[in-house]
Image (cartoon, rainbow, N blue to C red):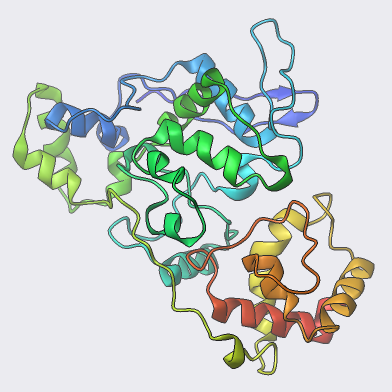
Length: 335
């Protein structure tokens, strides 16, 4: 595939790039295209080819909360403080697409020094056949059921339900922009890490353009079509250690890969040394129980959290919150 990288630099905003489809090579064949040719029914959101203009606007919307109109003027601010990219990665978040769990995502993040995001990755989102899955039962009302089976509805649902004070209702056009951008983030044959020789066989079968049940299975069994509900069993409130164990080193890593993603230098509510001292002082007033209030959305004291997004048990285990508390209690958190 001849990769075209769109470099968008407008008003000092440097955007990321994405690939446009054109004569793909074996390993760059897109998995959703393979599956359709081999006989899988087309998903409602399936695009044989992304609209490059809409995809570019979707990329802008995802990372900046607005997009460039045809007359080279910026749209209204669709998202004012929090953008999609603040909560969702656009990279693979596990080492293999065959397994997905809190532990495997944590290991991948630690090994590859990547941030831990509140939401699931958008890499391969077009390859799934359902969204929200078990998370739906952990706080979403019946409105989410429609979003579970339809990516377009899921995109709109996420913007409304997960934007905190920044909740927005996307127009159909804005939703289409994101869907076209997500097409560029679809899984490629190389992502499936097939045994030697298999990729060439798949590519050859794809080139013939005919349904192929065997190849449908060969490709389909290499990735998860639904992300499992991977919530780790929570720690009972009375059993929480709240920093009374030596978890400061692990907690420091977690703080930097989760909290600092949004609160780092120059970002929202920057965690400067002075602010860290105040946070530590405020949280210590109830023995750091408020960390759970903030990260989980539990009721209790010190719950005025504004735009703070909640980490579900799928994205951050209770044991990891315990480690974050251990770090906050330590002297190193003030430096």
